Amino acid sequence: MTTLPSQQVATASPKKKTPFSVSGLLLTLLTYLLAFLFFFPLLWMAMAAFKTEAQAFAIPPVFAYTPILDNFQNALPAYGLALSNSLWAAIGSTLLAFALGLPAAFALAVYPTKRANAVLTWMLSTKFMPAVGVIVPLYLIFRNLGLLDTRFGLILMYTSMNLPLVVWMMHSYMTEIPYAIYEAARVDGASVAREFFGIALPLSLPGISATALLAVIFAWNEVFFALNLTSTDAAPLSVFISTFKTSRGLFWAQMSAAAVLTVLPVLIFGWVAQRQLVRGLSFGAVK
Image (cartoon, rainbow, N blue to C red; front, side):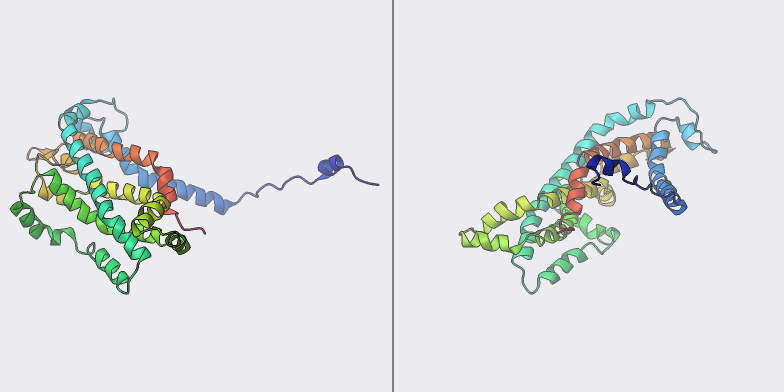
């Protein structure tokens, strides 16, 4: 007797449910706990921004309070100039680092020489020295060139800081592009400029997005060079936060409000660009 398809579906055994696992539950709880521990400083900072100074310094901590906006009102007058300086420094240095780093990464990836690895290692070695070890000669150079407390000086400083990052990351992305594409383009008579602008850059867009986001974040968060090379006219948001520690004391609630205003643009930008960031960081991982 032939079994009808409907009968086969009816008599098919139901799917087995995934058995309950104590180890899986503990791993999930541990994951949430670690996420909370990493997020808690930001949460505490945001809570302190809506407290009075007395509540912010209270021990034991105050959890039940009436939120106020006075701290943000005190921080806003100087926020606009600091935000403008940070945008100029972060975006300007990122664009300049890419203008210098992309051709270098392309040359090292597509036209490598025997010393290509040595060049990459040398560029990375510039990140090894602590910032405090070079601040005195940098300060003297900036003073002699008239670059102290200027946006252009800060852009140059952050460009030198992000250039090794751009070259290293974009070199790794460009080496993932199949070399046969370049060979086919050369058969058609493509020039080096055509290979760079027509092949390397379009195929490296996910990597460019991820690298650009990291470069902007590094420049946005940098505080040591900004604190020593700027004062008022070109001070970015990282220096703006430190102004709430004065000779009269530390205004913790106002500093927290300034920190929230500083972190907010990066959080929004990172949330909008998260898909490109994930694509860029995983580019070339799976072939």
